[in-house]
Image 1 (cartoon, helix red, strand yellow):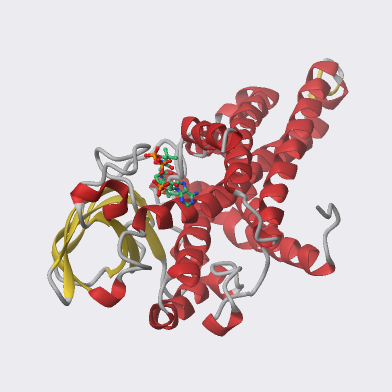
Image 2 (cartoon, rainbow, N blue to C red):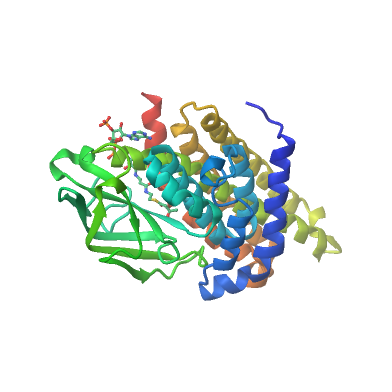
Length: 379
Ligand code: CAA
């Protein structure tokens, strides 16, 4: 695995960093306060090539590698994890899922708008009674000959109200268990599609999370992704890549909190000197820097394996498990370094601490990542 970056990688990282500082930072506290989705900013991210980074240019994508994606995700997440989760779902669950497994017709129909940020995608797997236990799907898609009839409810859907293209996982044959699950592309304006309740969340408050209801939605046969019964494996494969994005998001949240802590420790004086000169603070910063570097290396390793077309299921689970735990630890310590200022919104670290928590929950909880890692040990 190469540890140095190419000139192109550095350019992508710098472009994402500049965008985050210039366009995302100014409104990030207000969006968090008012649960406002960064709609204009996401459009700009599409124009910059951040919404379909790994997609082949023939479908409008950037044709970049997964390392570039990790670098950009880290920079965006340092400033605004609500924007970065939208970016992550669109890139790795929706665009990558469609490009890797959908028909040519579906790729041509959906990818150009999704990669350009003209449309946003959502991934509908979780249900009120199917979170970690993803095979327990209650949403059904009945085979009616030339179409499927979709009924059910999905919960905690990221981009729930801002998306217009939804990948929906549903049970087509209960008797077949996970082999009777399929994945479909569903459009928001089809009859019977309804966006439900918006969740009032602890963190990533700028991201819009909704339930979605389907009542007799007619889904054309051609909108099924892959062979009949491929839906659960599709979801697992897509989530393996998605976990690299969320690991990079956790990494960015941690490194954003760390950078703010270093800056604060250089400026804030106590007991006659900058607090940077106190060993109590130095040791905290040393631990933060070390853990962040370890998380970064796990993210890059998972990305590198994916780029080499090697098995990355366990590596992406390890990256997400570790980076999300680092994000929680580092952001909590960042609030401590900031003292009372860390507890107020103006200094950003309290938001980063709230945002960090979800990285241990979505795209598979830390416990699910341990299942994936443990199973790979005795494969
Ligand atoms: N690739 C291909 N196939 C896979 C696979 C993978 N990575 N992982 C599992 N499979 C296959 C298995 O081989 C098996 O197939 P066979 O029977 O033919 O061998 C089949 O899938 C079932 O696998 P398991 O027996 O391992 O299934 P399980 O019921 O034990 O569940 C689990 C495994 C890892 C816990 C899985 O259910 C899981 O990942 N749960 C978490 C779901 C999740 O991450 N949800 C996130 C929602 S999306 C989201 O959060 C987006 C967002 O908002 C940001």
